[in-house]
Amino acid sequence: MSTDLTRLTAAELSERLASREVSAVEATTAHLDRITAVDGPVHAFLHVSADQALATAADVDARRSAGAPVHPLAGVPIAVKDVVVTRGLPTTAGSAILRDWVPPYDATLVQKIKSAGLPILGKTNMDEFAMGSSTEHSAYGNTHNPWDLDRIPGGSGGGSAAAVAAYEAPLAIGTDTGGSIRQPAAVTGTVGVKPTYGSVSRYGLIALASSLDQAGPVTRTVLDAALLHQLIAGHDPLDSTSLPDEVPDYVAAARAGASGDLRGVRVGVIRELQGDGYQPGVLARFNESLDLLREAGAEIVEVSCPHFQYALAAYYLILPAEASSNLAKFDGMRFGLRVEPDHGPATAERVMAATRGAGFGDEVKRRIILGTYALSAGYYDAYYGSAQKVRTLIQRDFTAAFEQADVLVSPTAPTTAFRLGEKLDDPLAMYLNDVATIPANLAGVPGMSLPSGLSDDGLPVGFQVLAPAREDARLYRVGGALEALLEQSWEGPLLSRAPELEEAR
Amino acid sequence: MSTLSRDEVARVAALARIDLTSVELDRLAGELDVIVQSVARVAEIATPDVPATSHPLPLTNVFRADEPVPPLDRDEVLAGAPAAQEGKFAVPQILGEDA
Image (cartoon, rainbow over all chains, first blue to last red):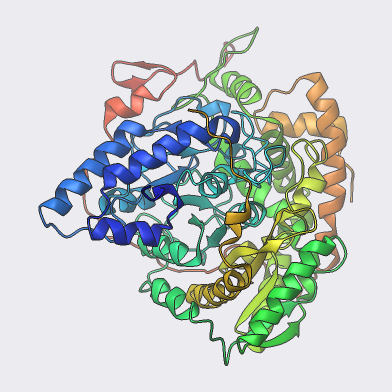
């Protein structure tokens, strides 16, 4: 029996494509078939672009046959979160206000993916405009966690994480404003990286909060994340916040890490990101991973970040404030939905209000109104101004902590995947899912989540690694080492313990 | 710090140009009041001596070469618009009757 191509990592698939043992069309077809077979119940995809993906694959095969040089990931299929604009493919950001909208241009990261020849399988589900931690705020239905279809896949990038966890794609793109790459990775047993702010261009991301948003890789292994990060990183003149630096060698760091040698690496455990509110099973897996890091030669130190307890509050002022401004463009004039008011004159202003009333979901309305309020006259200093000061204090906490440690670690999320519907009516409870991931966005530092085992409930737990700004390579070194040590102890990847999904044929 | 009343939510929703039903207003007022009270704790540590940060990794004087590039394809852009006419966006009247 031939290998199931969907079970290969992107790195493995890339080797077989390069040796021409497998063709890009075969690899793409295998993943499209897998989507057909399991995406009904998982619902990771909002749109599947089979024809375009196969055309890209055929083109890559032709180039390889002709001996033309191609990118190492050429022919490795990828899924793209629906908040990233793709020319010719529908892009909704999970919102009814953009139903059926087809962008007239590509995001810079999509251009890089297209020029490298990765077939785009489709667009993945997400919380509307990336606002949420469970993908339940999508206007197009829930995505289900492949480990337990009654549970959330995390959010906002639940679709990308579920697609990778369900072997529907070896690679996916996510975006992380407060944890939307890392928290879904944690609850689906996959790997997610939020790069340093500015490492990956934001041009063509439908902006949620411009000072926090960052796109990054969603994969099953640390090496695959490094390969994808390497592809999408780099300076972009179209994004004024894009870092002008040379892109470091993430892939080499991941490979070096896989040797499992962490001698000389100082790992700081953040005191404030454990304890109350964290499930015992989550903390148990976290502590076991610390033991492995120690055995690998790392020095474990405890660090304190006293202002992190204010991070959530600052985030839920800064994000809504920026979102209320960014989402003003959805006015029913140039793209997406237009709704005329029931009665009275259909002036532009009234059409805009009717369109937004009909087109935005509950969470988007909540946050836009919160942000408008926080920015409004008389409240600006108390809310938005104070939140920006807290941001400074959190950055200082990081600076002090990174003087004592090369990387910082914590559980990625306080709990494993909860049941669909469980927190939908309690916005504050939903916001608490991101308590450990938000500080990195406020400071712009990079973070990774990788699987660290199963909790008492049999569901995956995520281990978060944070590094100083521009030191993303440290994530890959430490993450690569921990992954190798954990997989030795498990005798295989964690995902191999996930229940097999029933295939519809 | 003040709490967020139903009237205040209605006023802010109008500023944000979002029509809300009466049911939505009732629910949002309750939810937002809880959220605002929770996030207001930022003021506890935001003392005058702390500078504000608006951007995680500030870059200054960012320029790019001023080179002409092909614009977006007009038909593709207009195909995504709610209404188009004569190669332009068709929009509702901008001003009210009495303006």
